[in-house]
Every structure is written in structure tokens, then in C-alpha cells.
Image (cartoon, rainbow, N blue to C red):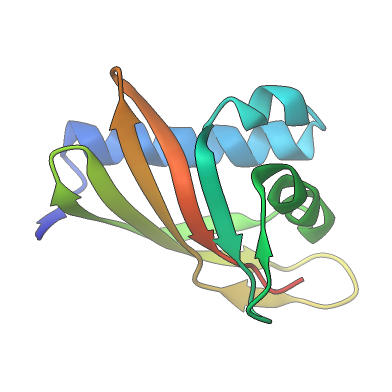
Length: 121
């Protein structure tokens, strides 16, 4: 495993992808957001329930706007990385701070999210 730093092109590309995905969800562009998910995507929620990309996007939408900080990428193989970050929701009825983890794979030159742990909503 190799920890990637801020100057790394891969890190910057994945950070941009994650921020783009969250923006698409906020803008209700869920169809476009689905294009960022691998066909085999699976999310395991905090309850242990497994859900598909469509369900994960709807849950992420319900979370509302979050601020991303402390992004970290760990490379497991040339085309497999883990992305984690601190997600903070300060608005709404219940503030939230959680560290989600997502696995991204690169296929045909495109990064796709294949797995994520569930957010608490």
C-alpha cells in the first residue's frame, strides 16, 4: 500500500471526482451521478444492510450538503484506491461529522466508485 500525497495527480483526480459526485447529488442529477459508479457497486450501511448505487445516491441526497476535509487516498494496486475524508454537516436539524470510506477502481482510464461504507443520516 502506498499513501498518496496532495501533489499526486491520482489524489487530485479522485478528490475532484468525489466533490463532483456530491455536487451532482445536491443538484438532483442522480442519473449523471450513477455514471460514476461501477456496475458491481455495493454499499454497506452502518446497520450492516447492503444497498445498490441508486439507493446509496438517494440516501446521500437525504444527508444534505456536507463539507469535505482531511481527504486521504491509499493506493492498493495500480487501479484500486481507498478514499476517505471527514464529512461535516453543520446545517439542518442534526449536525453530523463522519469519516466515510470509498473504494474506487480505474477501468478504461475512468475512476468508478465500487464500494463505500454507509453514511449515518
